[in-house]
Length: 379
Image (cartoon, rainbow, N blue to C red):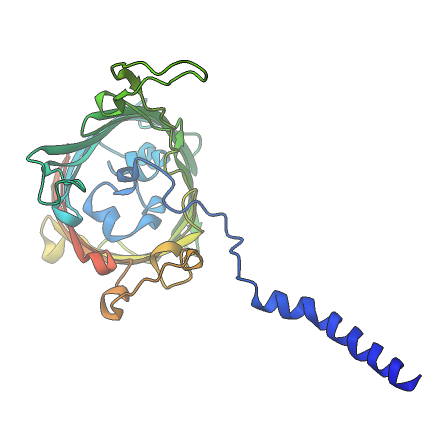
């Protein structure tokens, strides 16, 4: 009796431990549903102007110049005079991005209107296929463009809001697509400890998905043989691939800016931002700008800028991709620079006329550094 009882106890203990052992051996399944890389029109995230690039996405709290057309439409209402900006971005893999905008205050300075255009692409790239690894002899080009119109208004001496309507046009080889989106932003500005403080809420690229059509989706498909029918020779029939619209990279941002130093000749601003994109986990940006005006009693001014931006999928190994069995090796020196940006600016102002030159260097980790140059003209 004692032996049977002991055997039953041992068997029960083994059965109880079996599920734990099986669960320990079962492969770990990721519960992260973040749609990494599931959006189209990614060039919409490339910025506008070297100043904003040097200060990272957190610039939406400070943007009260022409580049507010891109970063925060509400900041456009704080412009004092008409101005225009043109910038060129030498991006990775010898691609080029160009942005330009012009804005005009009206209504006694209570409102502002502006237009912007951005373009990204490359030309004449060889076509490679499995059957022709050395190239087919054909080439293809990519041209992605967006154009936007912005209206902003001051609702009080501390609060402004703005909205931008965007039209996106995409030409990928022989396929083309279009989409519509809006940006919306608010800007609150006040004094804290006798120094300016600014708070911004923005949502960018909220709109319809990008759907493609064109000759690239047209094919010659064989005729389907109905069941039970004798097989007969037939020519391929014209057909078309079904395409699915991909969402745009929509991003919600909350940014805060504060002047640690604010005088007639010197200013030191610090900025921070929290962002939640629809194609990545939440991220943040931190930046600072030191500006000097009327250097040596002249009409020249200068600024130094720096920032760090964190995006989950671009930093470290906890990016939700390793669970798919993919292993990525990153050179530690280059990976450590991912998200860093810096730059400088020089401006000249005389009366209502002013002109400024800005430069930004942004490091893309293993993809290396990128350079942004821009020119601003005010009158």
